[in-house]
Image (cartoon, rainbow over all chains, first blue to last red; front, side):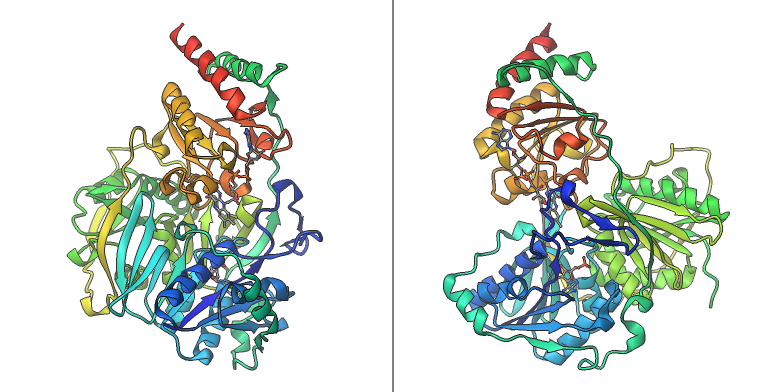
Length: 266
Length: 333
Ligand SMILES: Cc1cc2nc3c(=O)[nH]c(=O)nc-3n(C[C@H](O)[C@H](O)[C@H](O)COP(=O)(O)OP(=O)(O)OC[C@H]3O[C@@H](n4cnc5c(N)ncnc54)[C@H](O)[C@@H]3O)c2cc1C
Ligand SMILES: Nc1ncnc2c1ncn2[C@@H]1O[C@H](COP(=O)(O)O)[C@@H](O)[C@H]1O
């Protein structure tokens, strides 16, 4: 199985909310200086899903990433986990691209890569929380999609996917080529090994520009965006927590119960 | 350009009944339609839709379009997208709303790409701009740390999915009347490239998390499955259900479907108790509708205290036993 995994570099979503800052003029989050970006967590699950299939059935894994200010140590992580190739789409022309333009660029790059059986994406990116790009790539390539998956297995050449729904999961069968988005229920992504890190260091990424892909300029960048952002802001929350009194943790417990009774919540 | 008009919601029917968040869609859809002075339509896809169409009218729809076909029994991307594409091209709605549930979150983006229009996922607020008459969409981003306000200016329909429980349904009005119109699915089974082999439902013991008036959530700080049995005790005592942040689910301390938050359940209890969890924005996203938030955490700086109404700072292992004891006392006295 040859698998392409789309991974996005994002600001660390585990940053404490109090440290999260935006530039309201530019309508953008400000990257904290002391915290490196990460691969969007569900995309790491997607890499893990691909590695499990490679472990069982062989094949190659190509990771594909579109972005600017990419941190090589970050985008090479899938290679150090065991992926084979890395393709980067880097061009100022992509600046301001929305899900549509991103899916268009990624889908075009996938056609250029050529041979593939499966495409994996994260269920949603940790910055924009959209969950659109995967479905978009599938639509543009005219292939079926299943979203979001907690388990992906190959049986007799077919792909059997456990699709997460509210109270359980559905077992869905699809034939390759197909696009599947991956959720955290799949399980923790593996850690890179020392050897993996050495191998990744030596590998060079393939870098493609909009021109290399022959993209239609009117379909990428901010001017092509389907939706216009009017405003980005941090909602205000009044800090008004009432801490229960007491000297010891045991007293806190009892006093908390009393407090709830007082507030008629108990 | 053809004239796009009216608001259309895509409802979900399970076992002949409208899903509760379809009622929320009807509620907000009605408001947007009234602000535009246009009609509210509801499209229902499935097999055996029955009385759900009538229900949709009583909860606000002017017209209900029913696509009832055995091939639509299970949700499948290909079949639902094909039918919705056809319905949208026939009805030309100005606005299309779906729920951010298992169907909407898959169908909306695929449909938007097919129709070549924009979609905003997981909106918590929608309004009509009085001047442009465009739908102004508010959506949490960065896990809920920020809100983005967007409009889709150039293309139609304007599509949005709506976060579960973010909008209120209307009261059922039995005097409401409307029209029910049947639309044939005309599906080609060969064009359906996926097959649903089975559906596995997690057993829910006790009160359902989404319906519970009291929700007791545990986080990574609970330390293991044993700690969660203490939380069970609290939940039982208060007549509620247990939930969790993502780490306890990922670690297998509790079942995955107990996850509360952005990518888990959205809960709106009267009382929420968060224990041993930091209050990440992604978790808070699932509890912002809770009326009273109570937190127990050993770190006074934990973010959960920024949203909590009542807090106790300390090791939950020491705080909980006396809390349980006192609650029992008060409840029996
Ligand atoms: C795109 C995306 C979607 C996500 N969706 C969700 C989601 O839907 N739901 C969700 O929950 N998470 C979600 N997450 C994960 C989220 O970012 C956090 O990682 C997670 O919520 C943290 O869980 P926690 O608070 O239990 O753990 P931590 O942040 O590690 O907090 C543990 C807390 O326990 C306290 N503690 C430790 N020991 C004790 C003790 N003995 N007594 C009292 N307190 C103690 C600590 O002080 C600490 O505050 C998502 C992440 C991403 C990127
Ligand atoms: N810039 C990007 N580069 C590579 N993959 C991406 C990019 N943006 C989105 N994706 C993929 O699409 C998924 C969904 O993204 P989104 O629609 O932005 O939530 C992500 O989890 C990634 O797998």
